Image (cartoon, rainbow, N blue to C red; front, side, top):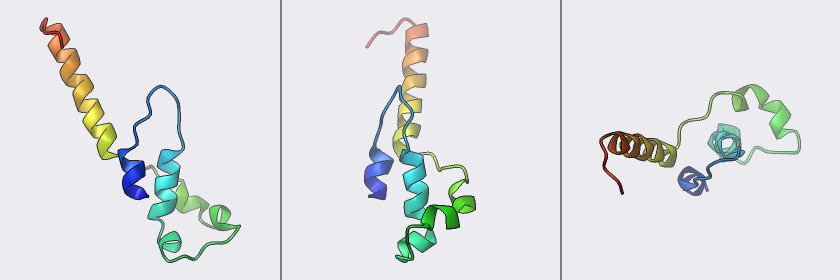
Length: 76
């Protein structure tokens, strides 16, 4: 699931992917210590900044390269 979320790329609209990654990365979740109060019990842990996905890093790099190429007059 983490891999699927990490590889998921959605542009133009906000998503909850990063929040789901935080939940799946939680030690309590990985150890199946979950109940209906999980979110409230782990609110502090789940409010930390999400890690940047590999897909987002890749896309950011591609966008930078395309902008640089466009400035140089190269079209794809």
